[in-house]
Image 1 (cartoon, rainbow, N blue to C red):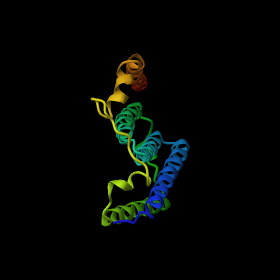
Image 2 (image 1 turned 30 degrees about the horizontal axis):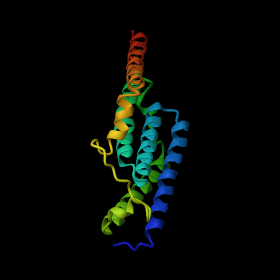
Image 3 (image 1 turned 90 degrees about the horizontal axis):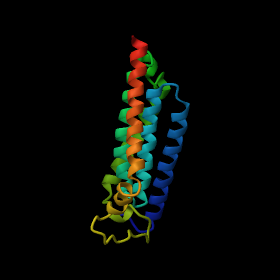
Image 4 (image 1 turned 135 degrees about the vertical axis):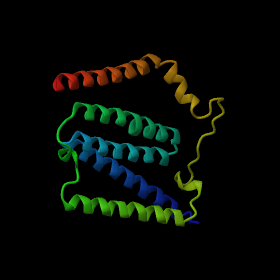
Length: 183
């Protein structure tokens, strides 16, 4: 078991690590010429943000970050990008040359080493939150999801539905643009 004096250092290190991953991923996302590579870097940013949400005790928001943004929205975005047929497949790759592959290998080894170190120690639920922090008790019948879902489907229902229609219109527009270009 990890000692109590290591917990704040553990939390602080991972908070800054995921923050740095999110910032670097966002910078790389903006600087990519290939839309597919940019979308993949945006997925990295979304996962880093989800990890930050989980670390501060907002597990539901972290899960929604992964499901909605890194999952559904990015699939729709990549579908539209592929539908537009933006060029030759060799131009869509982001890892050109040896340096990119070596850097990816080191990042992968670092992640595997961290997973092994974390799995070797018997992690307790206290490691998720900083020392002294506690989750507030939820006494509502909907649990922790109720306070998030109630305003979304009551007060903001129109905005929620308009956003889904806007995404649908964007996809239809991409299909129309792709059909005109191929015809």
